[in-house]
Image (cartoon, helix red, strand yellow):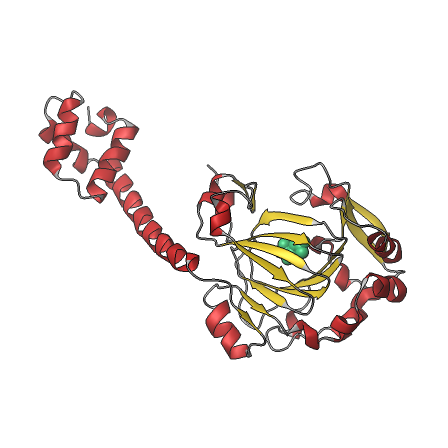
Length: 324
Ligand SMILES: O=C(O)CCC(=O)C(=O)O
């Protein structure tokens, strides 16, 4: 019988760990003897020749190397804050933030947009009220309202929806969310005249890459990450965004695809997170993989855009979707 048959999986794991931690061989042999292996030396020699052991050791070694890399990045991120700048040149943005997968708040980017002076719930009602939109509603009391947003989708007129936002003090029950691509409907295309994509976004890539978020105070988009970089522009009202670095691996333990059901306000995640209050006129760069939960502190209109002047195709970034 070969050693791989005699070696229980937990022993295989334990032995790989011992070798990776450079535990002296005589100590491993002692432990095997205590556990009833009559000839630990021969047993170990056999195990090390076994192809399953060799394969398992290589896997664990690669995993350990990746862990060291991630833990180092995580420690570095922990000691820094999310920077806030008034403006950023194209070069500085891509060099210091986009390429570094590091969030940044650009406080005076959206203040230059005509939208910053114009957009509000009443503006959308009065100027674009006849546009047909899809909203989500009936969200309150359900945990899956964002993950299964299409189940909560209903059709309506922008005028009715805007009126509802105006007349609602606080609610997470209804929300115009990104997935419906409302901003691409012909009746709303003129909204783009109020947006300035320079210097970070490529106008020619706009289609399918921009989303409008519009709702009352109190909407909550639960903790999730995206598979691309996002420039999140806060046009009207304020939002609180809680960010957790992608290197905080614990979130994957309870994740369902791109969502995590951990409470960001509770320890230990709270200590790992950054809370950003985003005021109208500012924008937050949310790099691919960064977990974020978004709460509207007032009635709010935001634009999330992904058509950067650099490559933004990270669709395979779905660690939480790997089968267990
Ligand atoms: O504004 C929101 O409610 C959510 C925004 C968001 O999560 C996103 O753009 O990925």
